[in-house]
Amino acid sequence: MNTIDLTQRNFTSPGQGYWPDATPEQWNDWQWQMRNSVKSLAQLTGKMTLSAEEHAGVLLANTKLAMGITPYFFNLIDPFDPECPIRRQMIPRIEEMTYAPTDMADPCGEDHDMPVPGLVHRYPDRVLFLVTDRCASYCRYCTRSRVVSGVGEQELELDFDRAIEYLQKHTEVRDVLLSGGDALLLSDKKLGDLLRRLRAIDHIEFLRIGSRVPIFLPQRITPELCTMLKEFHPLWMSVHVNHPKELTTEVREALGRLADAGIPLGNQSVLLKGVNDDPVVMKTLVQKLLRCRVRPYYLYQCDLIQGSSHLRTSVAKGLEIIENLRGHTTGYAIPQYVIDGPGGGGKIPVNPDYVVAKTPDSIVLRNYKGDIYEYPEVAPAENPASDSNPGYRRLEFFDPIEEREEITSRSWRAGRRD
Ligand code: SF4
Image (cartoon, rainbow, N blue to C red):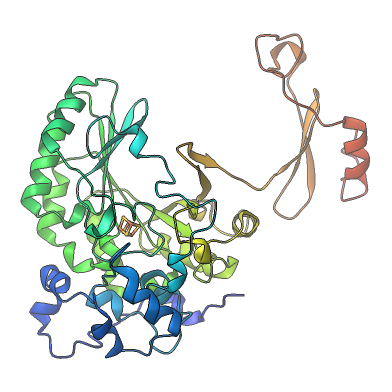
């Protein structure tokens, strides 16, 4: 089982670590960070001892998904522990070259739903707009590894003019999510121009940016960027944090600047083996996110991306994590656990089952402690599940007698039975 160092509840700075000679101006310059990213085996071997699996993985990474790690984020890696949760996310391993039979190149089926290059229109009222194929660092489990980083077999085609034209015509679209790659790697000017073109479309009510830049490259969240983003409200942002160690002093400050600019922040985590597949790690993460003014939003079951089976964990583990959060911490801290239906089914919520039984007269529930409660249903005429309302889909009922006998043997509360 994964364990957590209790100090990870605290916010600390990784400092300049392997780059002691950088001036503070250089270190705090996001473009310097990008120029000095760790991209090669030679850069890595000078800083840490790689396992055989990592060594072979790094050699092959440039045929599939490039390695790239900002100096700031690299300093979070434990050079002595191949199982370090940051290292598992960032350093390629040879297992990435092994494809399970169920693995897919495009597990979310995005390519099928692209009416123009870079624009995924799956749900009626909202679109995903892919605006670049570059990220500040590359996650080894990336769902879009087929197109991001520029070394895979597929190239991400971009055509902003055609995308804007499509959106102007499709009046049903009210919500645009900018992603990639990472939209915050565009210059302030390019990003501002794009947001301005989107805001000029009357029926687009709501803009969102999905970004891991505040975590990989907090130096990018400059006051100038925040001032520019403020022009485009309502603008929301989803960040991507998987482990409490990623929430450093620098990240907390960057997220604070975004929150101060009035941008509501949510977090999307991916459930990853050896990284965060542990109730204690997850509880620490979600509580730390609240302290950064970020609401945990989704916990994703890892997609069936090719070569990611060594990072995937069971759905039962995801349910155990949610079960250990619900009732045990602040409600705002609990993300929705989802599985993206393989091949393009979209996000499907998966929850521990708190409904023990349903009958036409009542619903029987358990709370987070396992205590059982019965809630009476409304009168049959108002009950969607009643045969007297044939317009409603009839619910499947458990056998009430058999179920109740089973409940009695657990913790049925005396006096509540009818
Ligand atoms: S930041 Fe997002 S898009 Fe980029 S590699 Fe990571 S998961 Fe993929």
